[in-house]
Image (tube, rainbow, N blue to C red; front, side, top):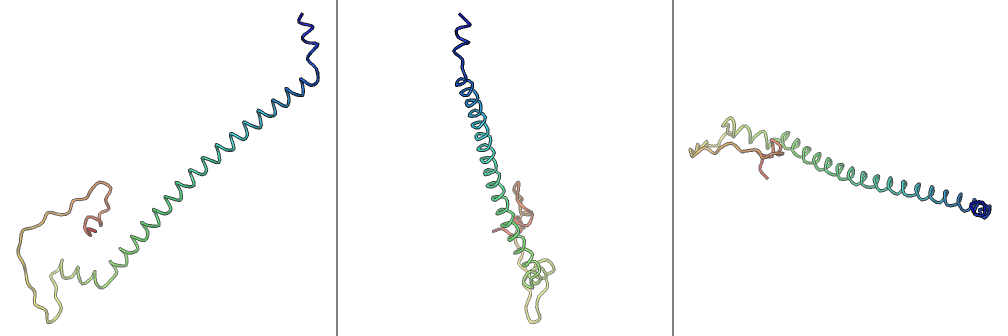
Amino acid sequence: MHLARLGSFGPAHVVLAIASLFLMLFLYSALQTATHTYRLHEQRQQLTYEVNELRRQRAELEGLREYLASDEYLEATARIQFGLIRPGETAVIVDGPRLPPPERQPGQRWWEALFAR
């Protein structure tokens, strides 16, 4: 009885088995490629977001650097910290309650606490 079944297994069945094997290998390869492409796309989106965030931070820091290098900042610092005045101006000292120093929130940069937006 077993010999009868083996006799019915011919060259067409071998070709069909090999074709099925190649089809499975092709599908596996396509699935791997699709998965890899999806991961690369996600990674690219994440990196694009990080680059844009770094550009925003850079622009903010460049603006801060320009302000700190300006005459406006120098004059404000001289007036506030050292009490200096320009010739011809009259200094007026206003005595009032002291404000507590600005508190930094977690993740907040030190200059953001000083220069409230």
